[in-house]
Amino acid sequence: MKMRAQLFLGACALILAASVGSSLAADGGLPKLKEKKTYKVGFSQTESNNPWRLAETESVKQEAAKRGWQLVYTDAAGSAAKQVADVNSMIAQQVDVILLAPREEKPLVPAVMAAKKAGIPVILLDRRVDPVAKPGRDYLTFIGSDFVEEGKRAADWLAKATNGKATIIELEGTTGSSPANDRHAGFAEELKKYPDMKVVASQSGDFARDKGRQVAETLLQAHPDATAIYAHNDEMALGAIAALEAAGKKPGKDVTVVSIDGEKDGVQAIVDGKMGCSVECNPRLGAKAFAAIEAYAKGETIPEWIKSDDHLFDSSNAAANLASAY
Ligand code: AHR
Image 1 (cartoon, protein in one colour):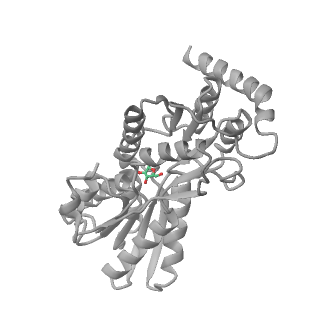
Image 2 (cartoon, rainbow, N blue to C red):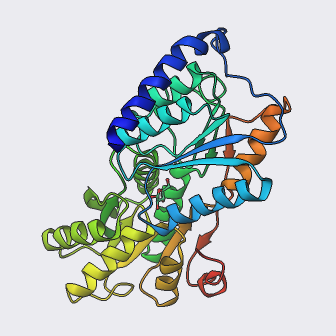
C-alpha cells in the first residue's frame, strides 16, 4: 500500500515537473524562490542508523520549529531508490525548497534534476552528488565539511602518533557516497608523504558500527600485523575497537585507531584511551541551511559551498568536549 502511494506520488511529481518545470527553469538556471513569511521545506534524510544522522535531523527539525516553517521529512532507510522516490513525493507535495542529504553520488543526480525541472531549488546537505550536477546551476549550494581534508588530517595525526610507520586497515564508508570517496582519496594523498605508512586492506563497513566490527574482524584475521585502523566514521571505529578487543588486542596500545565525526561515544573512546583521534565532521547544519534559504529568497548571492569549520578531537581536548558531543 505504502509502495503504491509512493509510486503514485512519484508519477505526480514527474507530471508536475513536465508541466511547470520547463517554464520555471527555461534559461537552464536555478529555480527562483519568492520571499515569504514561512516556507514548506522538504528534508530528505538518507538513513537514521547512527548518532551523526540523528543529530543532523534534530538540528533541521529544531530550526524549522524555531522559525515556524513547515517541514516535510523523509528517511530513505539506507536506500538510494527510496530516496529518489522521497524527493519525487516532495515535488508532488509542492514544497518550496528541498534539503537533500544524498546517500550516494550518482543515483541521486536524477532527483536533483527532477526538482530543478519542477522549479524547486535544492540544497545538498552534508553529502555531494556526482559533479555532473553543478552548484549554482542544478542545485543551490552544498552545505557541509571538506571530506578530502578530513582524510588528510586523519593521516597527518596518525603519522605524528606513529613516527610515520604504520600498517593500516581502512574501513570505508558507504560505497559510492561522497564522504567515502573523498575520505579515502584525502588519506591516500597525504600518505604519499610517508613511505613507511601503508594501507594493507580497505573495505566498506557502510558507516555502521556492526558492519564495521564484522569487516574489522575479517581484516584483522588476514592482517594480524596491522598497527593502525583508519575508519571513515566513529561508528565503524567503535566496531573496530570491539573487534580488536575480541581478538585479544589493546586498542590504543597495540593498534592505533583514527576516525572521523566526533560523536559522543567516539569522544568517550578517546578519553578512555582506546581511540587516538576523531576529526570532527559537524552534523548540526540546520541553522546554516535555513539561513541560506532565507538569503536566497532575498536575492543574495549564495556561495557554491558553505563549508563547516571542523575541529579535531584527541587526548588533549576530548574530555573538555564530551559534554557538548552528540
Ligand atoms: O556524510 C557524513 C557522514 O555520513 C558521517 O561521517 C557519517 O557518520 C554519516 O553517516
